[in-house]
Length: 177
Image (tube, rainbow, N blue to C red):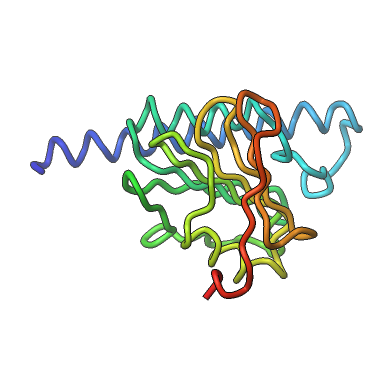
């Protein structure tokens, strides 16, 4: 890749990150106004929890802004939003770790831009490792197609297709290793 291409992709990654963070900030503000204008941001619960419009923004970043690249979002205890982008099949914080994040993680969201919401072996290991300090996780495979994992049911992913329950993906302890 030449310098112009590198510059282009850095700008697109920044655009994707800004789009997601701006949407999340708007969601926080809307909920805060409904609760109380003086509510502290960190006290607002479940901002990303089953928030389909926020999921659509993340999906758009993964498929339109950054065609077919995975995107990862972490919402921490203080409702800080951390975003990173990856390749077509993998995303990690790598060179852009979530400095300043406060545990527990309220929500981890990532995309499968190839269009399938399920937990891969890497995803299963991730939620298994982080399970004691992560409340919920989503994998987005399209608009209205996502998997939802929660700490209370650590060995299963509830998959939704066309905004309706589709199936449960289960795994046992041996699959986590």
